[in-house]
Image 1 (cartoon, rainbow, N blue to C red):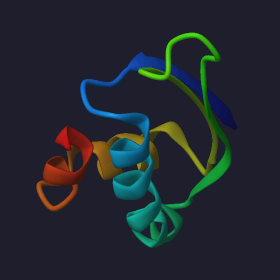
Image 2: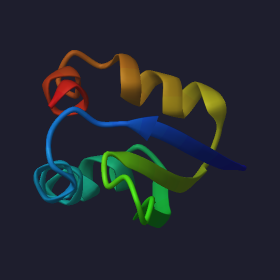
Image 3: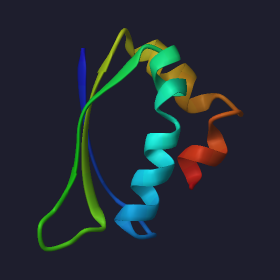
Image 4: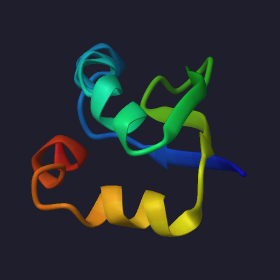
Length: 74
C-alpha cells in the first residue's frame, strides 16, 4: 500500500531532511519504505513524501510509538 504525504515544515528543509534520513532504519524496521521525498520549487517548507507500507496498522503503530514521537515532532 502506498501513502502520499504533503505537509509544511517549520524548520529548514535541510534540517528536516537530515532528521528524516537519520530515522530511515526505524521506519524500515516498521515496514515503511521511503519511495520519494521532495519539496516544492518555490516554497522549500512544503514537503511531499511517498511511502510504501505493509499495512495501515503498522504505520499507525510506528507513528504512535513513544520512542518515535520526538523524531516525528522534530
